[in-house]
Length: 578
Image (cartoon, rainbow, N blue to C red):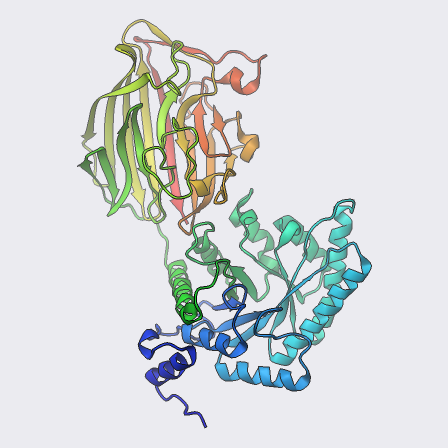
């Protein structure tokens, strides 16, 4: 007869032996680590795709128990072999193994879907779902995951929505009699949140619930918070996440939304990376569980903004601005002129593309004249300061001006030169502030020719510009998860060339949701400005490109300024990490 472990050390020894590792490799858990639910009511479990697909049931349950992962959704067709084909004796044995492990069977994950135009295929999916529901009931689980799944060519969308809803209503009635949930995963071609809501509302059965799935589409306009609120009333007991240390989705912000909305259920890890060796599986799961606990603790903290102390220090490339101990931004001299690089948001990371100043994995190298956060224009008395390497901004002086401890002010004096000829004289003041979780920069720019006049031509190529980090882009690469929206609600591609007082950029960055607000000052000439906003990552406020943006019949946006009447422009950059 096996010996029951009587202490934490004994438990670790027994479980470690079962996993083929030493007891010293199984570290003690934090208080409450392996408990059924966290104090918030949010438990942490796993979907056995992909990190559990190759494990038989006993090693799988042992890996969960060792790692403190207290719940599991068993996927169909995987090595653990928990399928509707199990007879009654086998079901009792499986239930016994699960009960003895101390791991909660949260439910079963089927691959059934209700979109097929073929009646026989549809009926087979409905009947198979009922079989999974009966199996989940017999094993002590709480429900079955299903999929919607896509729209088909030649079939009206409304008919597909009605069919999926009717199928869910039928299996929902069956589930209700077994005290089970039908969990509709937000998946496939029907994964647009508004479509899922239509399906759920039309299904109209209390046993049919939504399983949030952390899709890239969640971040599309109108944004994560609005999409979350659209479906939150229909959430069931489970939702799926990918690896919590992935930077492609704002898991910290999602966790905060769950806590704030008082959701009680299971956050289930559905890992998308290839699993490591079996002997490392428990360590990998444990690392994710610890991240889950840390995110819950972070979500429970009061998030009252508090000013951070701002200080500056000289570095080789310019002046570094620190918010607390974090680099908020730095001035950086490039061959084309001075820029801000990097630009960070406290609590997240760098909001700008690093190329061409530095290399970073996954970044594009197009448009090398796009340099972090910079000022340039494509037609200044016929000279192209946007592209032409011979049209440069020469930094004459850079200094830190006196300010209080909650801000820093840097002054630039510069000359816009073509060869040895000075076309423009610039004075720029940049005021930096920050709180825990936000950064703020105000730009006050004065431009004038040294003598006579100068004309800013009508071109889209300019003016106050930022090139975004890969995950903040709308498209143009596998990590692009961002969105653009102006003050009037024009989003993404439709925001290009439109006038607006603000441009909002939103997307995931280092596991947080980051929101950037670019502001055109009300006293700026031609406020609200036009925006050269591209979905591949360029966003620029441009008060000169009227005809370039609005078409050939529009008035020219060219503007002439003189030494006696300089041009003053002010812009704001506000970055928030949630």
